[in-house]
Image (cartoon, rainbow, N blue to C red):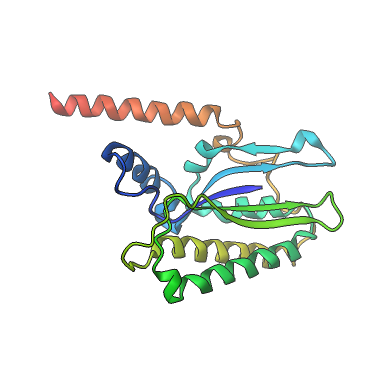
Length: 214
C-alpha cells in the first residue's frame, strides 16, 4: 500500500494562520511543490521473506527528492511481473479521475489535502487491487477556480506509473529492486532518523530566527 498526498494546497486558508503556514511549508519543502504529490507512507509485505518487508512513514516521504519518486515506485511494483496488469488498472482509474477534473463539474471543485491510496495484494487469487481517493473533508465547491495543483499531481503520478509499467514489461521480476538492498540510508530507518533530522532543522531555523531578531 502507498499513501500519496496529492496537490499543492494542503489545508484551507480559513484555518489558523500558523497551521496554514505549517502545512504549506511542508508542501514547499517536499516533492509536492515540484510534481504535485508526495509519498505519505508506504507498506510492503514480502510473503517469501518477511525480513524484506518494508514500512516507511510520512517523515520519510517528506525527505524524498523528486528524482527518486519513480525509482521508489518501480521498486514497490517490481517484485513480480504480475503487477503489470495492476498498473494498467491504476492508470485506467487515474485517467478517469483526470477526465472528470477537466469537466465543468470537476473544475468547480478545489481539492484540499486529498490522498490517493494504491493497494495491491498478490497473495490472493485473483489479486486484490484498489485505487482510492480519501480525505475529502476540506474540499470546497467555492468559486470555480480550477485546482491545477491537484491535476498536476495526478498527471505526474500517471507519468511515473506509466514509465514503471514500461520498464517492468522489459525486465525480469525483482530486477532493479532496492527494497531491503541498496536504498539510500536516509530512507531505511522506519522514520526515526528522519524525525530527528526534521527536528534538528526546526531547531536550527529557530536559532537563526532568534539571531536575526537580535
